[in-house]
Length: 211
Image (cartoon, rainbow, N blue to C red; front, side):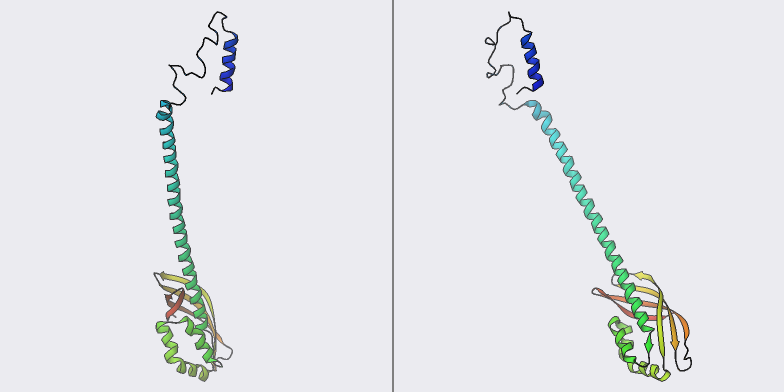
């Protein structure tokens, strides 16, 4: 099929043709392919030689780019998820340590059992044994000295965090009232808190007073 521009050129050539030249009737029919021209039904060697390889090359590049993009996105997403998981685990450990030390440094001789019950769900290992085996004696000490303490955690720092274990440093201010100092006095404590991850929860396994 001829384009509009080609058809216009052919019309101009036909208008300017010499009358003595053979008429259109003497010319081969448009429906009859010339011996020098390839039939419309025959595949073009040019299309096969240039068009197809170019198309294949373009598609190959596009597929390669898509695959590379998918791989890059998967790696990036994996890194982001890993980072988010680690950050979430770190925050959870810090939150539990803060709660445990606040509860540990806050006691009231009028209700010693509440003090023990509050700490047990956060404890494991040596820290849990401290309340399980010595709860009675500890309650007696609170009652005899009429001890009341109020703890406040000022700062929590992560010293080390591994697969399911963590070690944190906690700075706490504690106001202590007892029979000798009824008005109370403030003390500063620095504690090392060891923790173990149990499922999705962090538990305190040991506490050491640095000061």
